[in-house]
Image (tube, rainbow, N blue to C red):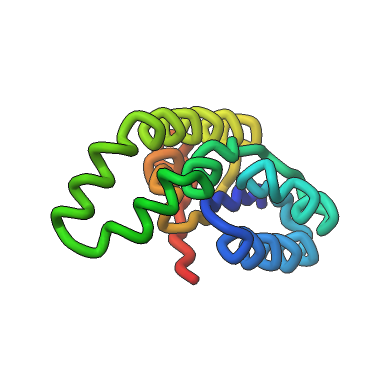
Length: 138
């Protein structure tokens, strides 16, 4: 079976998907892991196929704007200000990630897509490719 694992976020979001991929590969499945470029070596060192997602969304979170958003979004007004300030950067990064994830899905031609909840495209891509979709929550 061909499996596409797709995850967005920190190493704590990527590493469990890599571990799952190792188990699936040991069971003789073909596994592609679609995650951020900064985790390429994590995926490849595990002997899995890597399909890149841009680090742009993580770079946004690592910026002053991102830190401010995390620290000052605990109230509805703070959340509204965060959205207003970060909309352009975040929406551009998300559009790029969806495009990159679609490229990975087309290349992998998976029978099943296992996706992190932040990889919101999992179900839609699976439907489009005639594959099954599995939400894997951590």
